[in-house]
Length: 559
Image (cartoon, rainbow, N blue to C red; front, side, top):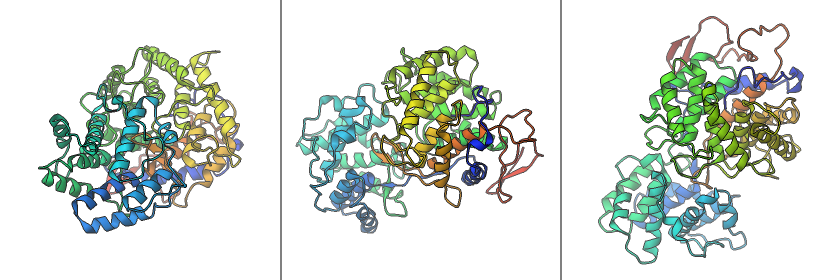
């Protein structure tokens, strides 16, 4: 996701091509994100509450009679979602509160499941069936068909999916009057440790508790598990999907801050935090304390370490690249978690961007990755569903990977970029922004993805109007207003508030780097436009200024 210098060998755009407010908006947003950095380099952004987990916890409290105070707060949170715009949220909230369903506004199950990759379909159908069963919700249209045995196969699944599938299988077995195997119950019980949410995943934690609830002898475990879940109850009374994904937010913030002109010590502080979080095998997880690593976090962490200093961080970069190498399949694609699992376009684009930091000896891996991306790109320029509800997320990542590669006629890189540009041109809304899917209202995150991709274009084109729209979504404190687009488990959406800031800053940084230098500016060395901050802004400076002291909540760093 990083910006190359010079930007992919492209000629600069005229400074008048983009809104005059671009520089101050970028500085304000950068300042806002800088103030999120903790002294250890982590960018904190806890997840917001979600209806799914809140409803499951309320059902547990109702069945166990535990903790009436927190129950009232949960119920108050869910009552606010009984008329939510999302039909599944409405159904779950009303069911958890024992309100009658709305027959005139049913959930379109097939449309919902189509938002996740095809290979996950049977498992997601089973999960949705189990949730509706636990909440005594009226069966949604499309779930009445038999759940296939494929939904419960553990073959090739990573640890999270193995536990989630086992919990779902156990819940459905109880409903049919069957006794689950002791080995399944042992696996579920092994995830429960007092005060700890296994892999920081509240959905799995609550699913396990529901699966063990009918099994005699687990009352102490259930009591402690509910108490642990309540430690994560948010101020609004709800429960989030996961505790946070601070490692992912920290890594993406590193690329965004670098793109937007943050000083080297800022990027180095983030890089040193990432090195401390690197797993012995070379990869990174989405947050600290989680054992399962993934291609996305690992790939972006490689980019940050490269930006902070390819020689300084040579050893951790080499270990991380080894992790990626072990995951690439024979077609050139990358899965999210485990070798042998189905490859995905978004993960492949992420890995290609990471490989692109290296010398030409690794270009063969990039060639293979781009070949896989071409095979997955649809005629309209989009890709299959990924970990975002915006189709432009993978488009953005794929274009960045392709733009760093030679664009010979009819090459994979050229085909990826051409199709993506056509999609972006055809799907821009009249207000200048882009929505998550065709015809959707504009939002800041989707627009940020589009603008980042368009920054690799030869001419400003639709980026001019898109940048103007994005600036209208900035709040007075510098942050960005946007609907959420993170998904987990697919296709359930959740909110990590900082990501709108991160990807908007990344887009503004990419756009800024395409502008011609200001008249009289020193164009030696770094070829980006230096963006100044308001005087009150803390740890940021122009490249080439004297050695400042950086302050992060009392932490002092000298460049």
